[in-house]
Image (cartoon, rainbow, N blue to C red; front, side, top):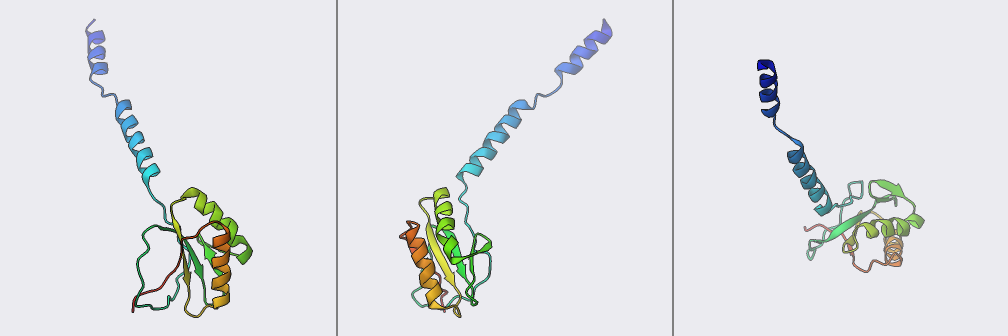
Length: 134
């Protein structure tokens, strides 16, 4: 009888962690859903300087054009013909965002115009070209 009583006391002294785990799990889901993810281009660019450069707040799609003419989106190099499809995919994830093209100061203007054309064909009208302040 005494052992039975001790065992019951021991079982009742344990803490039930399931409700705390539920709260932590719900908080984790909340933070994941409300986080805004920024898609980086994938390479470092030497941006041209502009005295009128302004910060773009809702820029979530970054496209980089290197000095050699390579195009980078979301950390990987893509062909000019794949820019539209990639922008449409990234735009579906965040429809309110905009596109920023980071063109190297040594890159060709023709490639920049082709990238802008592909972005506009993807349905994005809010396109900016990145520059740094002198």
